[in-house]
Length: 134
Image (cartoon, rainbow, N blue to C red):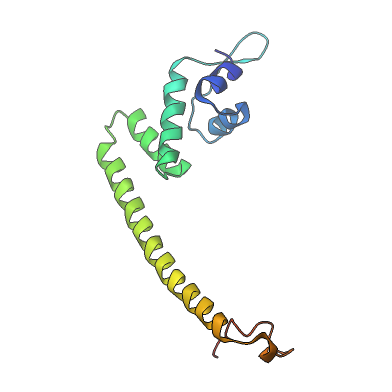
């Protein structure tokens, strides 16, 4: 299969496939006599895995670690579970940060409802946002 056929089969751009090759996520394809890349059909399954991994939030480095384990003959299930657990912890941490930011924004909106723009001075860019305390 040529790169365009592979790209169409997994709905990615050919340059994405080339990028994955440079990153070592895909094996180097064979070249036909005219120099065109020729892919084994198994590359489609690998690309689908890469895309699915990105879909759950894995970085390309994390995906490469999974592929490397599989390439070494190791079943990567425990490693994948550990990566997923770390992703979940990160998502929950970010949710907490966003909840705190949401409360701060609600407070600023409430404050803005009580302030009069006439009271804003030239030294204050906007008196809705309080100056930091030093």
